[in-house]
Amino acid sequence: MSSPTIVAAVRAALEVHPPFSTMRGEDLEFIAGRVELAYFAPGEVIIAPEAGTPDACWIVRDGVVAGRRPDDQQAAEPGLQLTQGEPFPVGALLAGRAVSARYTAAGDVFCWVLSRADFDVLIQRSEVFLDFCKRRLGAMLDLSRQAVQASYARQAAQGRSMMGPLSALVRREPISVAGEVSLRVVFETMERERVGSVIVGDAEGIFTRQDVIGRVVLPGLSLDTPIASVMTTPLVTLDAQASAAEAMLLMASRGIRHVPVVRDGRLAGVVTERDLFVLQRQSMRAIGDAIGFAASVDALADAAADIRAWSGALVAQGVAAGFVTRLISRLNDQLTRRVIDLTAAQARVAIERTCWLALGSEGREEQTIATDQDNGLVLPDGAGPAERERMRAFADTVNHALDRCGYPLCRGGIMAGNARWCLEASEWEALFNGWIDRGDPQSLLAANIFFDFRALAGDASLAVTLRDRVTRRAAANVRFLKQMSDNALRNGPPPAWTGGLIGQLFGSESAQIDLKRHGTSPFVDGARLLALANGVTQTGTAERLEALAEAGVLPERETRSWVDAFQFLQSLRLRVQQEKAAETMPNPNLIDVHSLSALDRRILKEAFQQARMLQRRLALDYPG
Image (tube, rainbow, N blue to C red; front, side, top):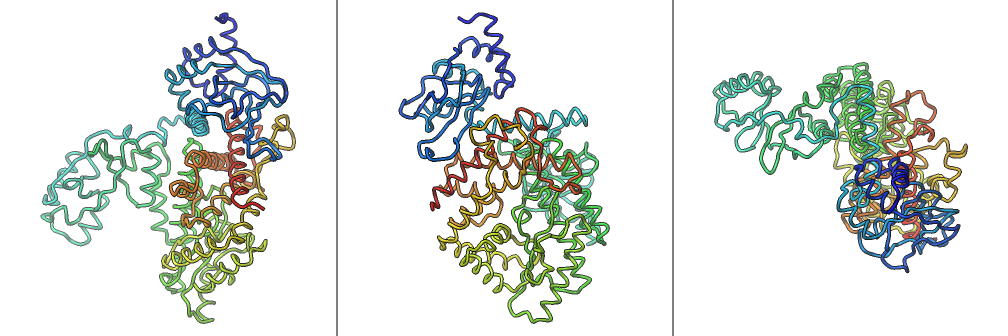
């Protein structure tokens, strides 16, 4: 039995590291009172696959533990680095199996040792510790987001998190009316109940105050008209456990202001835009309306500034990066479509016969606050020289209008206003086929931008057809896939963060890190390659990885860790851009690691290790 002094010292040392930092005091006392201290000499093996099921859980107190898988014995650096406060091997203990890596002391190492029996008791009594063991990186990301949200709450007195469940926002039962009820009765009901919407029939549709002018007043309908004839159908709902962020995204994509909430199979209430944004100066719908009603580029420039300001507010609240980047992309999509429509009307061109392509991060719906343009234009086959020049000039006008809205012209000239990227459908296909067949450095560089294309405006079928043909051809060209793999391995995490040089972590060589080049790019490039190789047509990085896991190409657990790591790196990029004037930064993706909390540094290290693991997967799939 340990003395109270020793127990207090162990507890004090543990409670500064996740997951122990969020565990109950009595659970920390349980650990501190049962662990024993063990020393391991440099190079000494702590646990290896041949030892069978582990008989203990080790928690690093001092030093570094290196984990290396048997198939990584020739690797230049270890695949895993465990430092102070990190428990291992929790996955093997939960599954009751042997470890998959050999854990070795990288220098002098002291570990607290918790017996297998005590580990089993701990996961039964502590949900926090069990969740960490199951999700590890995901659990640490939750802690990081909570810290950001707490900081925002202190700074801005924001009392409601966008990641909270919709159930917390539901204030009353929904008001429902039968489909045959007249408009007069419905209006009287809405006025009496002071609601902005009613559910029609047995969740058949919805009618809101915003529908009155367009569907009743302007058509001159009689107040005796049945409500069913003017309702919006089908009803689009979200579960009560869905987050406010998901409701925001749904409103953005559907252009609606009311979302019915379902709990246990029945309607529980209606969450409105006002519920979501009552504490925000600008609402998403207000930005959307400003875009929709804008009659000039100057008005759209104001809306674009609001998009950046509002996105920054979401980042400051700790809203998940995946949601924020999709929201930025979708609002930017709306703005771009409005620019295209205004320009097309002035130039008298038929945009519906063409297809405006979003490329790069916009094509992946992964735009951050600081973003430039990458786009192209697909023309129908048979367009003559005069028509091609007319459409190129139209596209060039759109590009410069977007530049005025704060989306800089692409330095590499990858824009629809460039004659190289304003092509007929057959020419686009020939271009992609040439890149696939040649596989030279210039072709691979183009693949990193153009293979993420999606339709943004005009005839989407032109992009769908192109996607199907390009994906089939790429999947059939093994040499091209190998070249893409080699190219994807060129940009990787900084060695000091994934190897054994732990002393360099906060030295001058790693103080500044490019989160795009060394962080998100390995995931983007890896997901693109695997998607092309396996016929996956999604363009988003997380969506590609998840689709590959669903198809059985990638293991689900590793995929979840890769997606979590990618989203964390995206969140850091957003935070850097939100905290500083992104448009004035020479490199908006550069972060000073000294500015990060201890928790975020730990997650960053884990994220880089996950990037390295994905790259190793590519190296194994496409060996030299």
